[in-house]
Structures are given as C-alpha cells and as structure tokens.
Image (cartoon, rainbow, N blue to C red; front, side, top):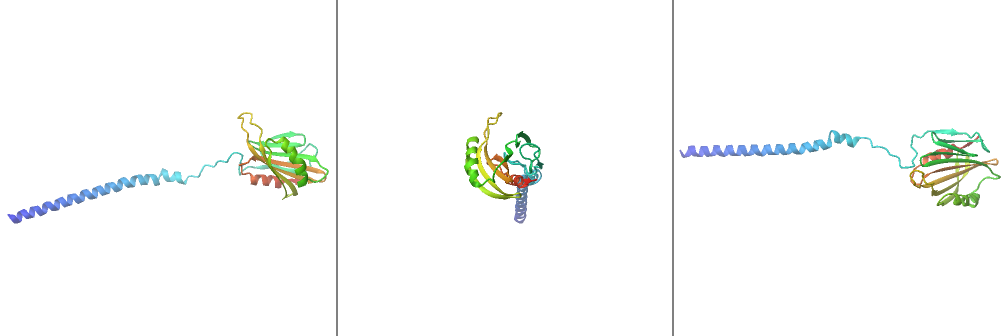
Length: 216
C-alpha cells in the first residue's frame, strides 16, 4: 500500500512538471510572436517602401533648375548688334533701347550695348560705374572689381549686392547678388549683368551665360 502511494505521488509530480513546462513554453512562444509582429510591420512592407522612396526635390528660391534650357540672343536693333549671348529659354523679355532684360521669378539677365572710346578697366569701373550704381541700386554694398577670362577673352567683372524693387503683390524685398561683365571690342562695350537672391546657387548657369558671349 505504501509503495502504491509513492507511485501515485511520483506520477502526480510528473504531471505537474509537464503542465508547468508546457505553460512556460506557451508563454514564451506568445511573447516571441507579439514581439516579432511590430518589428515586421516597422521594417517591412510600407515602412521599407517609405525609407527607399526617392526624396522630393525642391529648389531654394532663386535657384535656376538644372534642366533649364538656353537659347541664343542676337539683338536686331539698338546701337550695336554685333554679338550673341545665350539666355534662359522661356524667360520674359523687355527691350529698352539698347538694353534687353530677361526675367523669371527672382532672377534677371540684363544686356546693354553702348559705344565706348576705350576698353573698360578695373580703375574705370571703380571710378565711374560704382558711383553710378551706388545712386541707382537700393542699399548698394560690397563692390568688388576684378579681371577675369571668359571664352571671348578678358573682361572686367564687378560683383556687388543690393535690394530688389518691392514686389507689387507681396510687398517683399529680396537681397540680390549681382555679376556685371564688361565686354569690349573696337569701340563697342556690352555690359552683361546677372542677378538673383544672395542665397541662390546659380554659379554654373551664370558661368554658362557669361562664357556663351561671342562677338560676330
């Protein structure tokens, strides 16, 4: 009788151990499943697609798009027509005598042809052009004159800053950066002025335009 009692006790303990182990495994498996589900939803499916999607491009104000096309401008009137220069295609054009102005949003290309007795120099620009611009450009500042080389040859470059005219709709005023190139040949001077917001990155398009100038 005592032996049978010990046998029942052993069997009972074995059953309790088996049930306890089974419960422990079931809880562990449930925990793994609940942990894996959120991880899968965050790293796969829609989440992975969002992380790999191409970013939306946005040009800062005044930046000329990389895909901007350019066309040759050849003046047909005014005091001198013996040159060409490439300007952005589709920009609005305004003619004022020997001056042609191309604008789009916050950027401007201004081309002026004049008669000149001699070639411009850094000194003549400092002595004559800068005082004129100082009286014409609102908050004119930071003038710097230098000689640079473009495809057409040596030119005098004047860089400076100034305020734009007030927008008639928004009333906003933009701080602009200017590049003024003075080209000269045989009594003719062509001034090419490129301008846009100071924070715009237009180094490449402005270089392309100034390099495109050619006499004909």
